[in-house]
Image 1: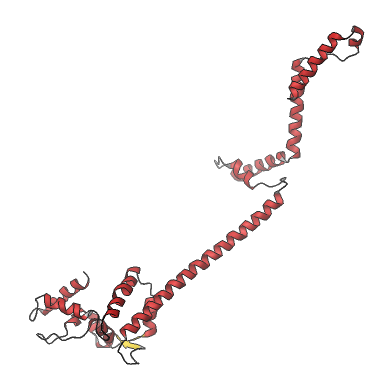
Image 2: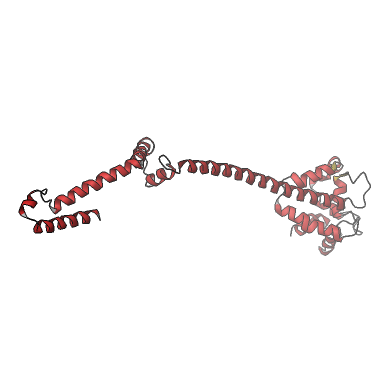
Length: 267
């Protein structure tokens, strides 16, 4: 635009010269060639551009970027050097103070969000624990149903096993065959008589890091059996006794029932 304007002025001056008297033309400055006018305009534009770079602190920014690259990234092949540096550069920016304020607020919000996320996780863990604790209390209450007050606060492992599997005597053998399912260490009278306090049972279920599959079985299977069964009746007794009868191992091959019952129990 500016170059075109200068050219227009030159053309107009030439037209004026052609219409002026010779003595008047001698008083005018000499004509400037088109090439000289272009060069003068280029130099003027370059001067204005340099002034713009200084006034907007662009030169200062470029110098600092060079210093940053020489100090921190000279040996690193980083194609995003310029964009990353300019993204964090605020000197000379009229909105620099606002940018710094927003950056501080953003950092505060990120820290607050991290705290809130941690609190949410903690609350979720506590909710899950309370759910397990409620399940444990429900199981204990069902298992102790029909027991005396002392056993409602603590029961022996023998009583616990009997409450779940029963103690029915099989007529043809005169034995409590479900006892064959007891672990070998469980046959020790001292172990069998060990007391299981209610608090310990609740802690095992609520805080014992039980697998989710086992917790699901306790709630969906065991609780359902205890709810549906008659008070004081072992929920697995009928099923185990029927499996013993169906095995056709009675009355002489009871020693084979251990493997058979364990297979049935875990199918």
